[in-house]
Amino acid sequence: MFGNIDATTDLLAPGAVVAVDLITLEVAPEHNKLASYIMTAVGYGTAMLGVGGRQAGPFLKSMGIASLPLTARNVYEYVKAQGGAGRRSTSASRMALRPVSQYAGPSVSRTYQSEFEAAGSHAF
Image (cartoon, rainbow, N blue to C red; front, side):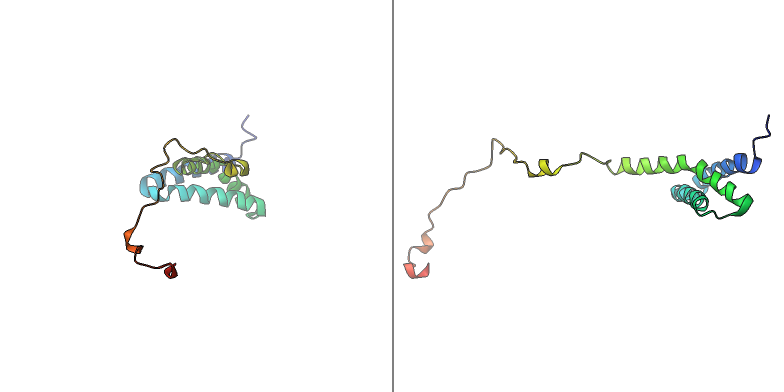
């Protein structure tokens, strides 16, 4: 029944992720996000590079897989705090003419300035 479960990779790796998450939350909460990023990067990085040998390789890969939900949650919270992706503007909407509002401010009118009366036509 339990013959297909490897205690090291299937139980210890997710347990290590939970332990690191809880310890960093209690001891150094400012480093909790960084710890989840590191666990995911190390796990997937060693799996892609084939580093770690027979015992450490599967353990690190399982650690990366188990820490992916933490990393995804942290990335989601970061994007949400930044305001999200927002509405994408296409080139057509950027180039479209915008209607002028009803009230455009005071109208421009010429005013008479007496300081130039004495100046002759040579001044202009």
